[in-house]
Image 1 (cartoon, rainbow, N blue to C red):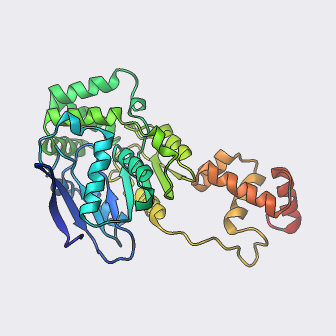
Image 2: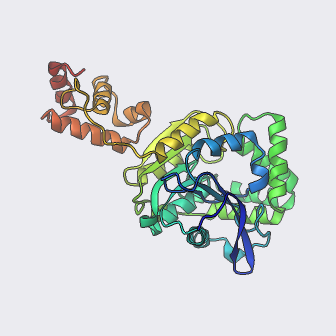
Length: 348
């Protein structure tokens, strides 16, 4: 069972995985589990006010479980090359959920942890209630131009101090010098140079493209437009490939959600975790729901499905479905005809 809040250890063979439990166990909502990022440190991470603001904001009303992967943070620092596979990442997440007796969870997958979350949701659809992805990608090879990933890994492996600063320039966007220094120190305290390089190689070789279509949980994909570590287009591709996923673009350059406008990320992620009631038409909306009227007004302005999706912060798939419903309800053969009928009915 889950047990009291705090940092605990799970035996994985002859090694121990550190995990942390926070929040109420009886909230009535499925626990929120966050697959491990590249490197982390459960104790030191929490000292950063942005980290506290982010996780407290997302999981304010539910149980939150995070963990340091083997080789990093408070977990045993020994890691084998055989550990560094997507299958092993999914197996670790499954064993942790089994140990805590969690039959149904929501997953918050950030950065490389999004790959673990997607693969787990595809492999165990009956165990995932909702899926939220932040700064996600489907294939590590797409993160950098050819050769760049090898250069970054080499910098980390050969000179961890320099390597951590190179990564800070990529991950932090416009953060000040003090924040870059804090990030570099945290990374060096979270893993050795060799382990950090090995885990970074894993980040660059993860590939969940074949898993995306198998995801059945309601999914929200959140991505900052100017993310320098994981390009914006990769998040859009993930949202496009997961059936029914909602894509939420945000402004910002930092890859980490606890830098920059933390609150906007929290709102987007909490929206993805919330169970939305069925939308009912308002008394004066006629046959259309309020959201359908919003979409219709955008159609009347001549916007495409993609432009409407950007404006309303939903996926193009969702817009396409709304447009189809509008045409059906207004018995219109085309978008233009639907706008004309709506104007006659006073719905615009």
